[in-house]
Image 1 (cartoon, rainbow, N blue to C red):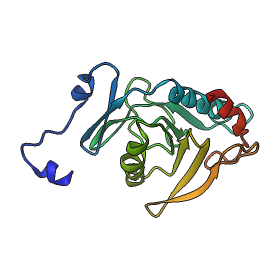
Image 2 (cartoon, rainbow, N blue to C red):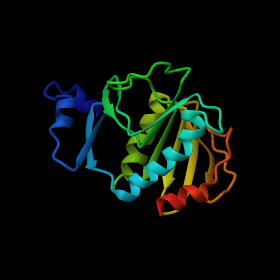
Image 3 (cartoon, rainbow, N blue to C red):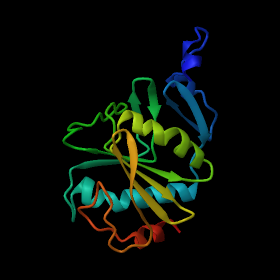
Length: 193
């Protein structure tokens, strides 16, 4: 990547390159590289919906929980060198993002990201995105493995991911950074299957 960017003939990808992608293909530009993949399919989207539903009431809306977060599926995030990347889910503490940019890309590193590992995105999420999230300083990352019905929770410490735990069918799962509320993960999986 660094060699490519040092080459004067190399043209950094732009948002126009993303807009030119064919139907059914989505893309991200991460650290000056355009990555493309097929759009998420039904099961992946259903999992995203289940997780948004499980987290939004207590943390975004403040019902039966502390509130104080913005939780979004596939937000457009723009950082230097990465003008468009979009995790499956991202969350910002409202004290860090008091006024969200309603009609433009978010330009603040998320406080939490969740990636749902599917057959078409697993390698990209683990090999490209996981280290990228560490480099930009995302404090918490969840990796959801639909096949294993497992959620691996990670916290960034000293630039490295520390695995906090793996959760599956617990009825009282407390997962950082949302550990103020106990989740019944069996209900989340039921919404996916």
